[in-house]
Picture (tube, rainbow, N blue to C red):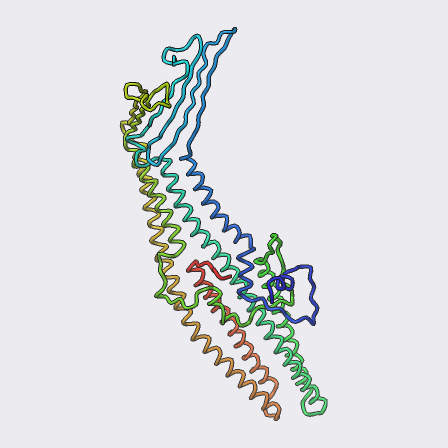
Length: 467
């Protein structure tokens, strides 16, 4: 069955199904595929990657070359007081160094002497640098480093978000399967009760049974019908809950139709679908967990912040040197006798603000380290507990299967004795109720087993690649 046909059969809300239509099975793999591709939360998770890329582009913008043009002019009563033009081209570099080219031209009757330049203007080329604060790390460098780390962090966060929505969707599917199985179980036993009621009724009419037996058999039919109606309501609610995870490509929510049923053999494929098949506990690498990777990138970002704050303890020493020339096209016109330069030094006496910022940065790192340590032990113990729980469920499933088989044998034997007139409806109903309870327990146990598989998938925070 192609995906296009599946969409038409499964999800179009306006499509109506008749009672004679064959049921369509919505497999667990196909269901999760639609959730991952079309669910709004899954799409929202993809946006985290765009946030990381956009943040990185913004940080790289601090290293873009820059052109600056400054022009001031004053003219009053036909007198041109001054006309000042200053055009600059700057190239920031990785360390606290900036390359600069400049052109200045001035004109006017009332120029300041320091602004008097040759008629054709004056060219300069030089460099400015920070020799204290900002030489090995500055805000521009720190922002770019943190942006790169944030981009990697968003990849890990995206895995966590996608994993969570697939986990929630898996629980909804398993609950849908449980309610479906319970509904089919009550349908089966309702049919059995009706057949038994008709048989008892005929025997009452023939005088082989007392009339009260017919009443008792009728009560059993009504009880089974009541149980079926209650199961149908639960199945309907589970179907609606499942529908909240199903969307079409154009962001239209869809509703599961009555003719769509779950895959009752999902227990055989759940490991492969969730991609936890053949994943022993010994292969679990704690450091590869997306949450820990996300925290590790966050920690590295705080390390960059701490380095930047520590750098603020250094004095600010900014220097610049520019060669001056009227003829930039002649290389020998640049010489050290014609220059414009200078320096500035600033240093707070107490450094209280800088030392306070550094303490805060160190405290944030320590706080995050505590969070990482706690996350490690929490994840490790959770995964270990789930592996042990799954091992126990394998034993429990074998036991409940034997119990159901034994109750089935007892019910069959009781019905055979009843056919020979050696038993009563009360004993049959008692045996049947025990069988129903054991089968409901088996269905519930299967649901818990599948949910534990999903919890293991969630605790590993894995993304499913083959949907």
